[in-house]
Length: 127
Image (cartoon, helix red, strand yellow):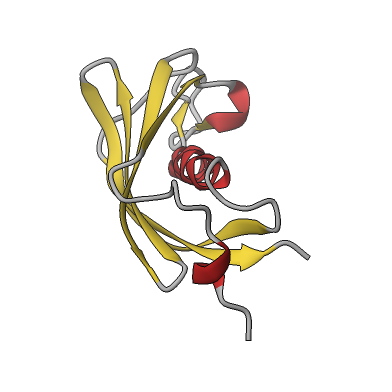
């Protein structure tokens, strides 16, 4: 049986953080009213950016023979973001156990919270 704990690099540990800045582009948008000019950041797009930051943080500290896959998302989308808004996603590794990683994630527009929650990923071999 494959053991992820034996092949992890030693520099992956709780407390590590990564920040990624991005701009809300047309591909990130959803229009809940179907009225022109009412487009906002969609929840699935926000979650994708959260997952991307978590995956990138882990990837920087894993062996070349490893990657991660997301298996749990528990987030709240608490404020809208308009097209062209500059956002920052922060991923912080909170826990590691048996090849499973738990991240605290949030998306902000300056000091305004857009989304927050927990994301979990599992370390798996690259095949």
